[in-house]
Length: 340
Ligand code: DAH
Image 1 (spheres, rainbow, N blue to C red):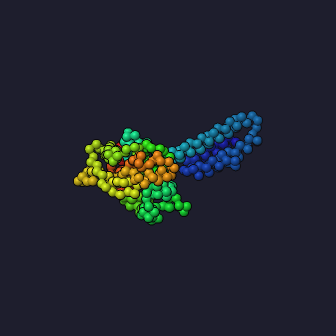
Image 2: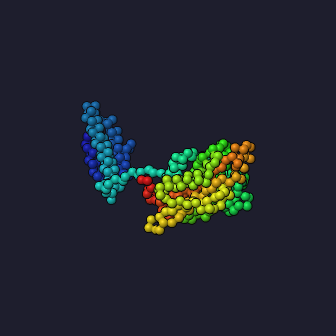
Image 3: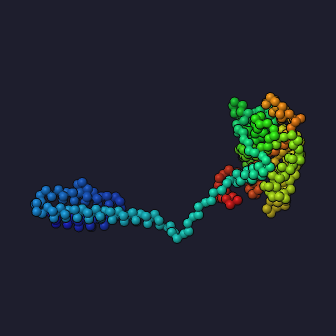
């Protein structure tokens, strides 16, 4: 039987050389070590071995089994190493590693923070309101007549129940005054929605920042001083700011604000950046009616309001040519703002 075991050992030694993949190795294992394999069969011959020879034969059997098991293990490790080497082929391990990317705020968040920080220094606090609004808060309370084009179904997203997606953050003015007595000095950054065709300067969801200051004797001078300071904080202390008469239903007088900037490689020019004005007495009257008191009586309080588009601000600030870059989340674009 010893001779038989030696023969199995030799056979296995030759056969393992041919086990050149995992399937062949498994075949080898079954052939020699499996339930019906050569070694198991040989082991069944132990029955017939004489008592004196049993220890020696038993030892031999164990040795051969261990040797065969080692063959399988060694071959398996070899095959794995080969597989690794195959997978790593063409990889240059001497190349430098990749730097982890630095996290940063989105450019829109960055402009919003700048605006908020400048206005907080002037005593404004943050306010918010719902994006799904009533017609009352978005339009009626803001002195915007029924037939105003902004209220058109072509321009505004309406829900079947008459609610709408707010077209501007100005609705937060109304919500704030309904619940807060004057003086109020708030800024409300947030999303606004319009049924605009999306192109390089329009999105159907965009961001605005609304401001409102109501107290006794708030003047046009306060409005100009506050907004000049805001835009100079964002664009530099010497930035020229001008107020151009305009019309908004909720302010009287109303203005558009332009700042003068020199885009890279171009002549300086005036760029429109925000809308503003003195709160229309009709807005105050409507608020008094909603509240059922007279703390916003236009004979007692005055105020100014303003609103600006944050995408536009970011585009001007960094010379971004297409508004869609701000929502596409393309890392190649966004990465440029990581150190700002
Ligand atoms: N709501 C205006 C818009 O979306 C912006 C605006 C203009 C807001 C004048 C104001 C304001 O508060 O006084 O275009």
